[in-house]
Image (tube, rainbow, N blue to C red; front, top):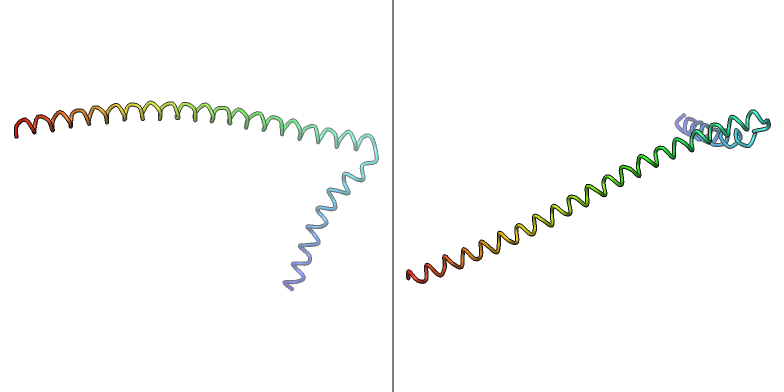
Length: 101
């Protein structure tokens, strides 16, 4: 029974694939062609809208990434300055300690 169920599912899947192809292959009248064309144009418009939204999102993400990179560069520069200042203070304290000794 498991094999029968598996075979039935395979047949249903194959029928669905064939039905879609047959549906497009069996367009015989102008009315059917107009309906199919209207459907395809609707899908095209939907795809274009989705593409536009994704492109906008990509541009926004690129801008955010650029801003974050600038902030990271500024923070690195600030850290470098702070480290240099710390090293300078450390050197001054070591000199003062040496003088005391």
